[in-house]
Amino acid sequence: MRKFYSIFAILIIAAFVLSACAQVSPTETAVAVEPQPTKPPAKPTQPEVIAPTAEMVEPETPVVTEEVIPEPEVVSIWDQDYIDQVPPIMMIEPYFKIFGQSQVAVPYYYDDVVKYAGHSCGATTGAWTITKKALEALYPNGEIPVRGQISVAAPGAENEWYTGVFGDIIAYITGASAKTGFIGAEFGEANDLFVRQNKMVYPEEPTGTLPPKMEWIFSRLDTGRKVGVNFNLAIITPIATEERQQMGAKLAKGAATAEEAKDYQEYWNDRAKFVLENADMDGFFTVTTYDEGLAVTPASIVSDVKSISPDEFAWDQAYITEVPPIMVMEPYFQIFGQSQEPVPYYYEEAVKLAGHSCGATTGAWTITKKALEILYPNGEIPVRGQIAVEAPGAEDEWFVGVFGDIISFVTGASPATGFIGSEFGKANDLFIRQDKMVYSEKPTKQLPPMREWIFTRLDTGKKVGIKFNLVVITPLPTPGRVAMGKKLATGQASAEEALDYYKYWNDRAEYVLKNADMSGFFTVKIYE
Image (tube, rainbow, N blue to C red; front, side):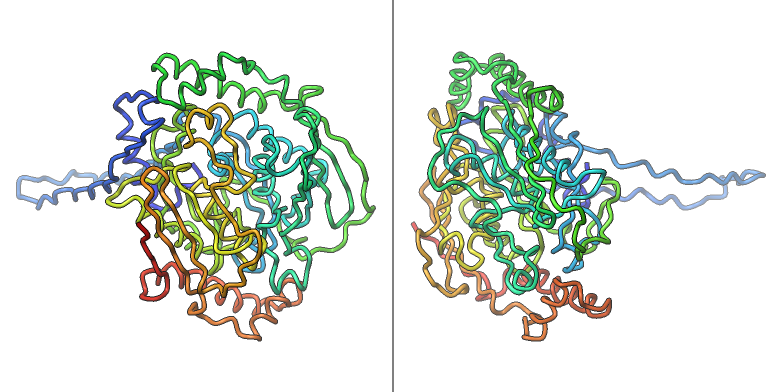
């Protein structure tokens, strides 16, 4: 699998896979998840070295054989094969280019968004396919889509039906974010391509539009080309009957038998696969072109970024894949038969979400990691949906929303866009994700080093606050470096200037990772 870049990650996953050999009913952990502490695998023993003796006779003709190193076994974290077999959507990210993180298109995978949403279903495959079809229409003839070059108009309010769940998946891929998106700082001041905030627009009030009639409007900002995509999800089979909805609630309570769970899991995942396998069926997804756009595409700073095979992709900055993953349990994965084991959430997935790696993204990652280590001590595995988060500012204040998106990705604590839980949430609050990330209604105007993120474990009431004193990060962002960032954003920097800036920028990100335990850098306060 393409995620296993580090030996550390391979060993962790292998340990969990081996522990899964014993049959466990998928309903046993649906309500009270009590995973055992994770133990690192034992180091392999060194082979015994045998000294040569007189009895050992050398052959007359030495035989020279070439050592064959077996390919490492690819181990999937998923119990449903289709989740990591969906071809990725290749995206150009201008931030990755100017920060020296990737000079080629980056693969965005279906299982990236499955982790974000917390499950795979007919809606997540639908949101994925809506995005794919819109991008194919906006960027025809094999042209690679560009994050930040796309805006999206949602067909309903962010907390209406599952509109926000669809929107989060679309934003993850396209970079078109709502209020939580990156404002762009000096890069956005120089080039609108680097502004991500408010490129996903939700109506302020519910539209009352029925889901099969909802149309997502995608616009390509450099050409003006505009397309609408409608998803007639009412035709998905197997049909979601009232009896099946009742069974979903039964699973969420942990009351279903092993046979009932197996039958439900087959039904649930068959619906997701139906969308993927029938995406081109007439009347299922309808693409409407509203504006053909300009005849000539304006020059772009990413016009020289090429695509490669997803299997060949690697980050230009090694640290992005060397950060140990955060292991979490996802109750939805369990009841839907998608994973009965803790699932690794990787830093590189958070980087794809944010659109770049920097001192802020490593900071948000470390805030989350430290909070979860306090809430779930002694190797206990954190549980998505069991965590609520209070943000220290409004979602569009400074970079609060950027931090919040990363925290939501790992913990499942979502704002208004999160999944309401449907029949599962009605049966068990663990399956409600909406409004478990709470932003201030108005800007708090707190200075960033004084902002405290409050994490609460809902089953125990334990609460912890984390502050991040980011002003101590080095190298310092001097006026000259800020000016160079603008120069890169407009494509005017020389190759030598770009290389120097790459080092400065990524050194800041790595500084956070390497100094996370430095006194006064991250301050942890436990509230009882």
